[in-house]
Image 1 (spheres, rainbow, N blue to C red):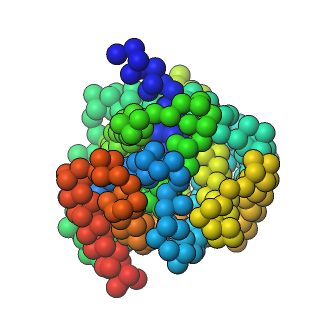
Image 2 (cartoon, one colour):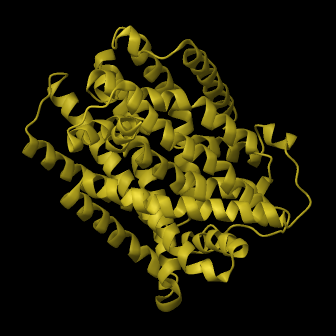
Image 3 (cartoon, rainbow, N blue to C red):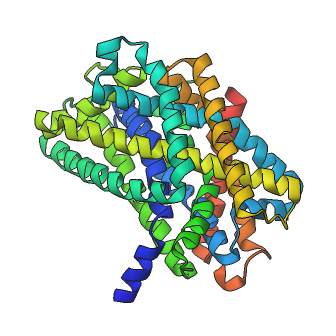
Length: 426
């Protein structure tokens, strides 16, 4: 038992980073909006996305442990065309995703320190380049080590806060009695509800095209600790983070449904005002004494998510570029790899700020666009990840079980079904 715990702690990190990435925008923003707008009408979408997308996230960690390489390397093994396709998918989403996460984080920072109330509403836009520079500097200096330590602290605080708020909200009951568990109008492809459901599932629990991050973080954790966990230990650690994320998603939806649905209150599109609305949800339940704690923990988890997004996209960009230029045998020196990683950080930051410059800080537009793009490309990533762990690329005893295979088939059909409908109507 002691040995199992010791091994779990040594491998602990990638799963928590994954959970942090999920909790950031998809939970704090999208799940809360879903509850506020449709009550429990989109609970099915939250549960289905978490269930049917699970295998394809798990396969990235499985592949990394089984092969000692990232799943991005696996894409190249399928053919250079696949790596180019993944590069295009990454380029089409990463600036929007980073911009959306940055806008939310800046909103929570503004709410915590009252920047807008002191310097005016336009001050939030000036926070974003400062925020991006700080994230880049942290990763430039400490890379994975600081990111790993930060997430473990702030994640624990937000987890505790959310659970307490959830339990107290259940005890107090809903503000409105108009709740229903299913709204047929959401299934109308021409409705605003259907479009929002696609955006919600696009990042629930997070974008499927960033499943590669867990494989990169798994390899980095092994390098950091000099400990190579077994496949079972790697998957146990990933599952821990995934389960935490999957449990919290409906908690945030319930907070939105119980405290906002039926009240006529509309969540603001401005990032600072939206952050304030989220924090007020918690303080309504927990009491005014908790405002500073919730504001601080909300900003902390979003800041951790922002750093994780920068790190994930920088590692992805560096690895994709290396493989495209040097091929499957690419093996750059540590100094060269670090330099490429630093350049990738700057590339991600500049691209995201350009997006924000043109879109402004309209949080809803940024988030809905980024999440919809992620949902449309999800079937491609799902099929490729499934093929890599069920074919000749890893040993039979390391391949997924029959149950996981069947869940994968259903998941691919689920993703294709909604993607085809969305493309046909929009």
